[in-house]
Amino acid sequence: MSLVEDAETWQALDEHDGVRAGELTRPRRLPVDVRRAELLQAAVDLVLGPAQGRSVTLQDVCPDPLVHALQAGLPRPKALDRQIDGGSSWTQLLGVEDGEQLVSVSSVASIEERRTSRGSRLVRTTFLTELMRPGTGERVGWCTGISLDLEVAR
Image (cartoon, rainbow, N blue to C red; front, side, top):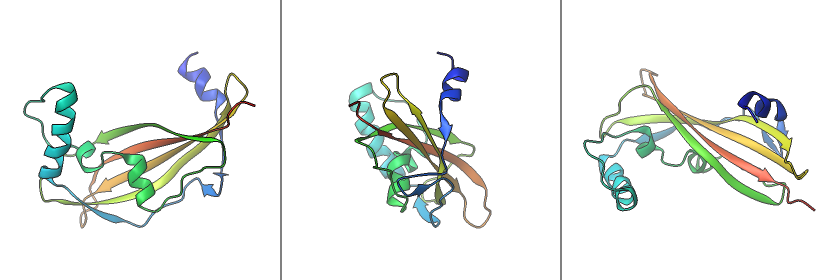
């Protein structure tokens, strides 16, 4: 199945289980901490091997966008039988420095549903966190986390 065909099978929803598309959190301060980034990288290095000359990225600042959005106060839909973390992505526009403070705002970017090949209902909720510099409002980047709410086939 091509990406175009896949995109056509998803139907946009305004809300699911009381969670509304477009819902926003209040801004949160998010510190850039090299020591925290080093600890995260050490854990990754144990599994994948050491990385050389690596700088701090948005993945270090916000390692799990879904968890970040939920901790910021957004609800996660749980109307169906099983919730699955559906993946994360990061887009970094500007570099970040140790000790810098960023501001993050999370939102429910979209809610979509489709039927699986077995006929079960599947709802995909995409959470978006935008990261900016306070004062200037410069957009440093954004990250997304996906939550899947799955109906178990009966």
